[in-house]
Length: 120
Image (tube, rainbow, N blue to C red; front, top):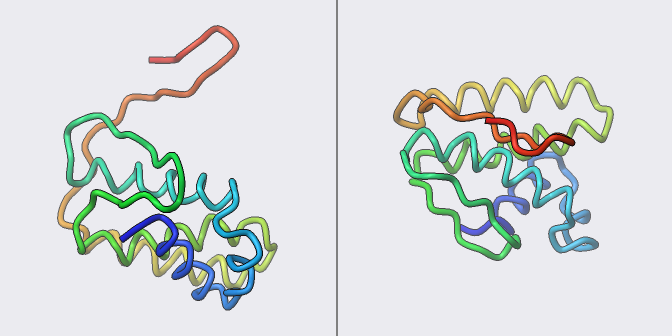
């Protein structure tokens, strides 16, 4: 599955498939995919996460994580829409899907960038 496939599923869950046709995976879509992809990555891998550079790249996660991937991306994209009921429903589905991903997340290192540089 690719990042674009995940975005298609996410927009369909939000009942907004036309958004993807207009944007073909805009920057906010790629950011949402990478955020959830990173969270799920550490449930299955111990090596360092490499974000997708574009939405047409293939995801390197198992089939168990795919429902959580779609629900999580839809949840993040829904934050901008302002529909609180839809957000709560998608968040609940994402949380439930996480229980079927096959493991607990490995400890992640904080890699946020600040003015001083990379936090570790």
